[in-house]
Length: 230
Image 1 (tube, rainbow, N blue to C red):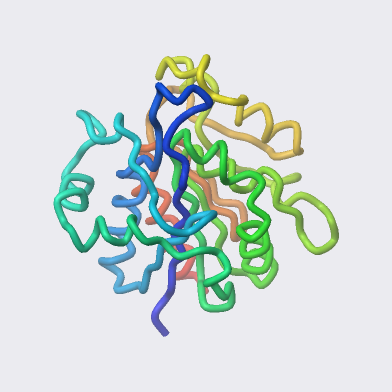
Image 2 (image 1 turned 90 degrees about the vertical axis):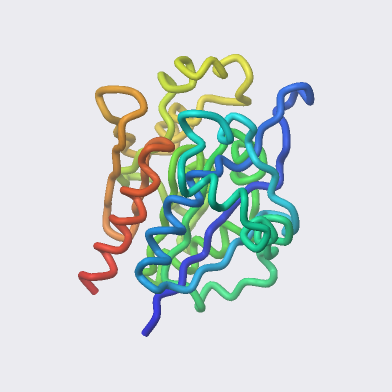
């Protein structure tokens, strides 16, 4: 049976300071989408509010603006998918085999407290479907609770954009919080690569996470590998 993937993207277009735009980090979507497309999986895109998902301007510049990102950006049909994303209310979690939270600093604002996305993640995780994220996408898992009231991330190994990487990217003064530290506060067993901005993926059961933009393809491949085990 064909696997079905639910990608989660942001609706936020700027930091607290409106003079600093942000949005979806395009390659984090396109790298994974391409891997899943090669496998013949069905894919859908959802956002906290539905509708438009704006693009992070920095993701449209070298070296982040690679072949898959350029191809998507130049394709009106692909861009239409980001102009009119589904809302969580449109989604039946039972229809999907994996949920994949994309990143971009924008997600720090609208992912953590989206109760509809938390519901979808909880339902999928508890039935053994894959819950995954890349880079800042792990902010979508910060406050997700399981049916017993425990945090999904508590006691589980995971990764996501490191504070050191925020500093290197020169956005440590712009971000609303330290995502790495917040994960640790919630009992997550946070891991990261020794060197910033190299691919790093952590698999803990049906929780699959990637650290940064270069990890998107590897994260998707890890999900494919997990499917092959079942």
